[in-house]
Amino acid sequence: MEEKTSGIVLGGTNYGENDKILSIFTLEQGVVSAKIKGVKKAGAKLKFASEPFCFAEYVFASKGGMRTVTGASLIDSFYTVREDIRRFFAAGAMLEFVRKFVKEGIISSEMFVLLLNSLKSISYGKLDPGGILACFLLSALKLSGYGLGFGDCAECGSRFINRVFFDYARGTFICEKCFNGEGREINLSTFLYLKKADGGEPPDGENALKPLKLLDFYISVKAEENIKSLKELIKIWE
Image 1 (cartoon, helix red, strand yellow):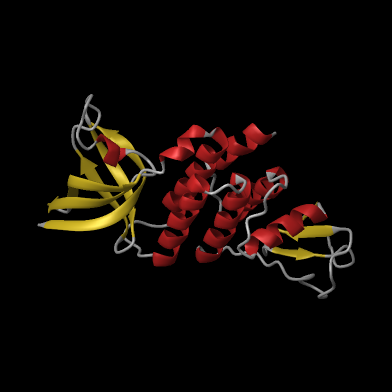
Image 2 (cartoon, one colour):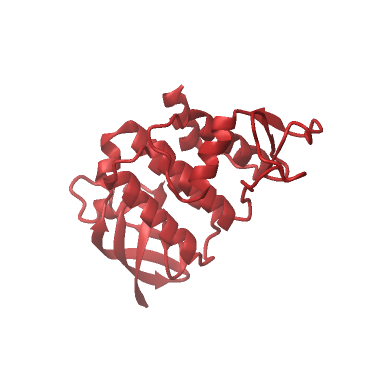
């Protein structure tokens, strides 16, 4: 049986001498696995279709429950992310998040659209990649059930003036008066950066290091996942 679907390559693993098993995020079927043959050979016709970030219309042949890529028509390679190391790791963190948080076969059209639009922004936009990544991670965390609350103090409802404390167990922020030792203090500027990003507006021209470190901490503690590309991006910025 043959099928066609458009998808974004999240990554792949080597299979045999020249083949790969790809993880492809599709709009219609969620994340699917598919073997692609001969792509490690020099001059392989479908080599482009096996690369991370590749957005293409794939043709699959299915046999015994296993998909094999038999053809692909490129839609966008997002090649420009490879020309800047910060954009590369920021975009890589997006792929890695989806690969870890979206289970195979689970359809998530909102996550697919979010990933696609974020890759377009980080590839062709002029905004800081850290801000684009922060927007992506906050939206992706919401879709995954780990959303953060950026209102006023989660306990008393007062506005933050000078000191802000992050309750990572609940994903909320509290004021100095309500802080009971659960969580950690963060800079007010970090809170305001993330609040802006949570509103869908990528902060530009502002230092993304501390906001991304907080998101990395929250993902590792609350969701018990490590996004290696995010950690590498943080190292670059430090």
